[in-house]
Image (cartoon, rainbow, N blue to C red):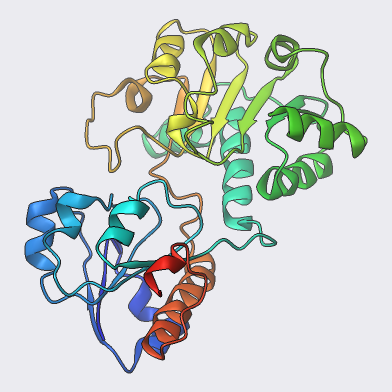
Amino acid sequence: MKVHILDDWCDTLRGLPCFEKLANHDVTVWTDHEPDPIALAARLQETEALVLFRERTRIGSALLDRLPHLRLISQRSVYPHVDVPACTARGVMLCSNMHSDTPSYAAAEMTLALILSSYRQIPQQASSLRRGQWQMGVGRTLRGRTLGLYGNGRIANAVADYAAALGMRLQWWGSDAARERAVAEGKTVPASRTDFFATSDIVSLHVRLKPETKGIITPKDLAAMAPRSLLVNTSRSGLIVSGALESEIARNRIHAAVDVFDTEPLRDKDHILLTHPNVLPTPHIGYVTEDEFDLQFSDIFDQVNAFARGAPIHVINPEVAG
C-alpha cells in the first residue's frame, strides 16, 4: 500500500524499531505541517493509507473529498480531529487502538517535570547562569504541598504516584463518576469544586477532550485558585474556556505550566503564554519520546498491516467493512 505519514516533525519514526513493520509498503514521511486541506490533498493524491500523529492534523470533508485512493486512516487514542461520519460516507476506515489499560507514562513524567521546573525555577536559573550571572531567585519545595488532580484516569494516577513519592498531599476532582470512584478508592475529594481549586497549591488537568469536556475549566475556576498557585495542563488546551487562562495570567496572580495550546504549532512569539514570566511553556512534548513513539506507532503500523491483509483491527467505523 501507499502509506503517507503526516507531521513527523523531527523525522523520528524512520529511526525506530517499529518502522520495520512498514517494510512491505511504499512509505512517504512528511516532516512539516500543512494545515490547508487543499494544499495537503495535493501532496497525498496517491495515498491509500494515512497515518496520523495524534491530533496534529484535522481530517474533514475538504481533505477527504480530494483523496480518491484513500481507504484507511490509522492512528492511536481519541479522534476528535477526525470527522468519522465523513470518513464512513466516503468508504474510509478509521482504525485507532484506544489502549484502555496503558497510561502514557511519558505524559505523566512530563507533568512532574513541569511541576518541578516551575517550583524550582529551573529554566530561569539555567538562563541566568548562561548569561554569566548566578542565582536569579528562590524556588519552592514540593513536599507538603497539595496537588489537585482534575480527572481520575490512568495518567492522573501515575502522576499521583510520583507526587506521593515526593511527600505531596493529593486531592481529586472531576466528573460525578470520577469523584464517586475517587471516594470509593479512599481518595480525598473536597466538599465543593470551589474548594478544590482554592485549596490546591497545584492543579493538574488530566481529562480527555471530548464535546462534553470542552471548556470544562472556567474563568470562575481559575479565579478561585490562590495567589501563586500553579495550573498545569499536559492534556488539551480546549479543556479551558478559550482565553480564560490568558486573562487570568494577565492579572499576574497565578502561575501556569502548559504543554498544549489552542493553536498548534504556536508560532506567535508575542503570545502571553510564551512571554509572561509566570508561565512555563513547552511545545506539546508530553508524549514526545522515542519510547512512547515506538509503542504508539507499533500499534498504528500493526493496524496498517492488518488492513492490508484484509483483517482490520481496532476499527472505529465498522460499517465501512460492510
